[in-house]
Amino acid sequence: MTLRPPVEPMLAQAAETMPGPAALRAGVAYEQKLDGHRALIFTAAGPGGTVLVQTRRGALVQDRWPDLVAAGEAQLPPGLVLDGELVVWDTEAGRLSFEALQRRAATRARGAAGLVARWPAYFVAFDLLQQDGQELLARPYAERRTQLENLFAEHALTAPWTLCPMTTDLAKAREWLESWTDVSGVEGILIKPLTSRYLTGYRGWTKIRRRDTTETIVGAITGTLTRPQLLVLGRHDQDGRLRAVGRTAPLRPDAARQVAEQPGSAPRNAHQQHLSRGPVTLAVTPTARSLSRRL
Image (tube, rainbow, N blue to C red; front, side):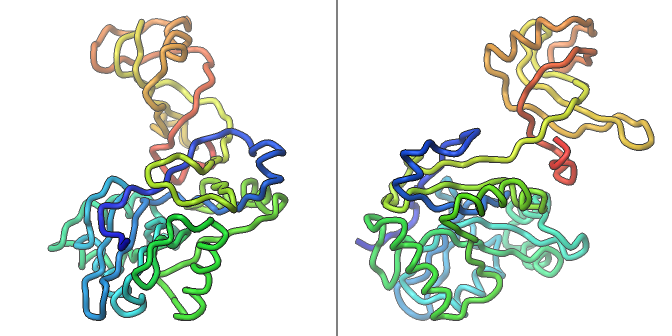
């Protein structure tokens, strides 16, 4: 069977800690998890065909990534399907930029080419789903990984194609989680059983994000004081100004009750209300990516 878009990618289940001893004894691989956009790359069955870029949800967006398409036509062999992460490098800031990635992902063909020089795209490949027109979904992860590494070596692939770092050493994985997550664009690790098949749409992998704890100020909410839905959080900068630095995911009922029970008062506004609250422990998504290591 030859794979054609849309292909539903295999997914990961979030976890706070490493898998138990039994899972580790069975053999797992650890990969660095990047803060990018999930994507699949399809090359044509024969020379001269078009390279396709598919999002996680199945949309074809190759018109927004002309640099990747050109590099794919120049470097990648036909009949190939790669799974990986799209990231963007900010040449002015000298780092990976999620904001630039979002800007490029939203810019269609007419304006996309103008963003390439400032914000070049890279594709970090972590799985090989098809090679030479033969799909590999039933092959174990270890075999697919070996074929992916051979693909990079045999075709001498260079930027924008990057091989995702992988290790089977637990100590190295812990080092990545503790130190590499200080690097912009690296947010954790993925854990994959060495014997696992590629199961489309199934959460058969495990993802662990590094989480740091700090205190923030609840600057606003959506919903009502008795039933808050989402919190907008802030911190004071060096000049004493309160700046928004993150938001929570939509609150689950138990977390919403915990927030609502905190002492304080605020103006009654159905859409947004400013609060003065006590401490509540919640997971936060940074809205300012440069502050993400502080949250």
